Image (cartoon, rainbow, N blue to C red; front, side, top):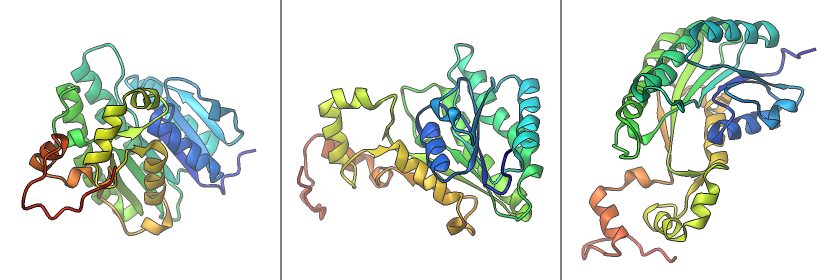
Length: 261
């Protein structure tokens, strides 16, 4: 029998990368974990973890699945969005459907199904492409992530009276299970990240999951409508400073301490 006294965390897109790290983090804290994704994961073999295979663009199936989750596993404590479009159809419409329409549908369906103690949390994983241009990503990705930030702000105000907090987390480039081999093979790229990042290294999916867990915890009980950058300080740097660093140059008036590599 499911113990509804446990916190119940729903992770949308919890089968890859950061999402899977989030699942592992909350599973270790003995939360009830519900996952919406396109495939099963090994973590779903645990008694308190269940994965629901859903195409987020299938509105009818998504609505049925959301009702099933709360009926079977009880009211939510946390709702974490880590999904992104990975289909082969029109990338513009796909990004908008998966990043925005599905997020709105899930929030609107479930906002009345959070635990009644007024400590609910929603966290959306965003991207620096919400305000910068990543030339490897299509326009729909940029528009979707930019809109996601404002959606978080909107729902922070709209759901605040219900005691539900809504925040964003914007990761920098992080080592994930799916990308670790690529970065490990590319030593010059690793070296460049160490040089240009103020903290001198790349982050990990587990570190992003830790910040998400903080935003879902009582320690963040008065934090809502915020976008937390978790990038080792890289987003603080001016492009000209980054260009000089990448080129191995030092401005004659710089006061920056030299980093030993």
